[in-house]
Length: 184
Image 1 (cartoon, rainbow, N blue to C red):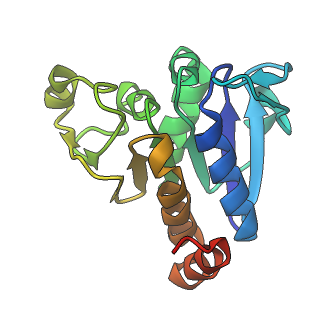
Image 2: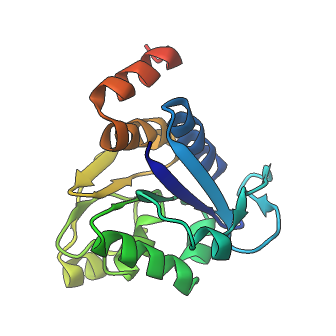
C-alpha cells in the first residue's frame, strides 16, 4: 500500500487538502497529515483541521509521495526548510512529489521543477522564475512530468487527487474511486 504525506500549514486551502486526503483514502492509500507545529490548522476559509502528527515526527517515516496543498498556506510551506528538504529528498530518491495551486512555487524554490512541465495558480510562479529554471508552465488542470504532479487550484482538486491515485495505485483504482464519486 502506498504511503503519502500531506503537510498542512496555517492558511492552507481546505478544498485542496481535504479532497486529496479523502480521495486517496478512498483508494486505500495510507495518508498521514502533518502540521508544521503541534497546533490545529486553521485553513484559508476558517475550517479547522487537526493533523495526524507534526512534521518533525512525520519526517522519521518513509513515504512514497509528498503532496502540498496550496492557498495562503503555501507561503508557510515555502518558508519552512524542512519542507524544502523533504521535497528534495523525495525527488532525489525517485519518489512522487505533488503540489496544487500556489504550492508548485515551493517545488520551484526547492529546485524540483527545473526543466519540467508544470502548472500552478496563475502568477504563483512568475515568468522570470520559470525561465531561469526552464520550467515549462502550461495552462492545464493537472500536469504530470515524471514523478512530479502539479495542478492549478481549488477547482482542479478532484482531478488532481484522481491523477495522484492513478500514479500511486493504477488506472483501475482511479476509475473505481471516480465511479463512486458520481461525477457525471
